[in-house]
Length: 279
Image (cartoon, rainbow, N blue to C red; front, side, top):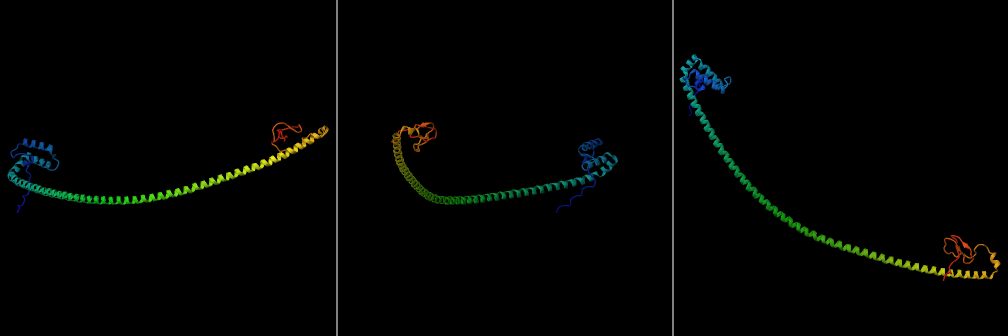
């Protein structure tokens, strides 16, 4: 069972507070006070306040003598108290060190367990990743195989459609070419018919014109023969107008002289036939 802790003495150990021995001189006390006053302001709390209190007691001879009479017992009390404080501090430091050791061990154990857990989790994740990768590879191969089959089927259907489309194009092209040939044959036949019809019409018109010219020339010769048999006076008494029939030949620009009556014909008249006549 632990002993009861000693009580802290009522009076301070002034010599110890100033870092002096019992037989210190007044000069030693003042030097120690000045030195400590630089480090610890006297107006502040301990240790500055203790230094000021120790200085005030020890520089006063009456107070110092009274203090020195009780100092041996007081010093022993402070020695016991400080020893207990040291032991207590050492125990606390030992306990704190032990606690820190236990905490360190606990932290190390926790870190070790955490590392093991992480390692196990990593291994599990790697196994799961490997399994997922293998499954993805199987799925990929399956999809590729299915895609290849679909591609082959689509290619086969596309070829069939292309063949059908090509046959349909050939059929339509054949029909179109046949229609074009039919239209071309019909056009050529129509052109040939029109050409034949035009040739026949031209031949008929030529025959009619030749017949008309022959009749006109016959009339002209008859009229000329009658004119030569009439007296000269009668010729002069004829009208100044050219009385020979108008044959409907094309107009001529400029002046022309009639071969029958000798009259000069002006522009846009129908002059008599100036040539020797149709052959």
